[in-house]
Image (tube, rainbow, N blue to C red; front, side, top):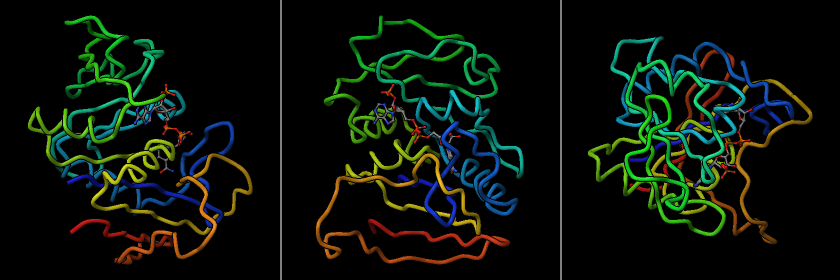
Length: 209
Ligand SMILES: NC(=O)c1ccc[n+]([C@@H]2O[C@H](COP(=O)([O-])OP(=O)(O)OC[C@H]3O[C@@H](n4cnc5c(N)ncnc54)[C@H](OP(=O)(O)O)[C@@H]3O)[C@@H](O)[C@H]2O)c1
């Protein structure tokens, strides 16, 4: 089960251009995010989110155990300065291209996992397969927009949760970005469930049963 979540503004931004995203959505969505972590075996983020936010990716707003933290960094450009590589609060995997890894190598406390390249990145299906092989079957993709969009484009999401905040940023990092279409009939029109989260509204898109 792979579930992604993004919190976005009315105009479809998840952060400012400089990367500030605390906080686009309100307390109820942040609490929801922690509950999703608590339900997950693994939480996945892209390298840009690590660089901007230096998140801990732990469960703090509710009861529950911390998921395994998974950071995607194709070309292994991250250093060990970030909290997930140092705090030992949960097991951490740095996933990168196999040609950038040496067997047994670690970055701080994190295990480095090499996967075959798929063009400029790593195939989301290969990431899911590797996590599943490790017994991590409930996967929460927490952002950012590039990472979630790649999982969506690859058909690797069961659910996509988008929480919309009544905020207009006017510029900034985009939420979902997919290859251009010419006809609205080519857009994805999933079954949705809708939830009020304080002043925000969350749409949960059911992409696979
Ligand atoms: N509002 C929210 O819900 C929310 C949530 C999370 C983050 N954010 C904000 O979003 C911003 C970052 O989002 P973003 O969209 O710019 O970037 P991002 O998704 O955090 O990171 C993108 C990078 O992650 C790596 N990556 C992603 N998918 C990969 C794949 N399949 N294979 C290999 N590498 C992969 C790539 O690194 P390489 O280029 O090195 O290959 C890619 O450039 C930050 O400002 C953060 O604060 C907001």
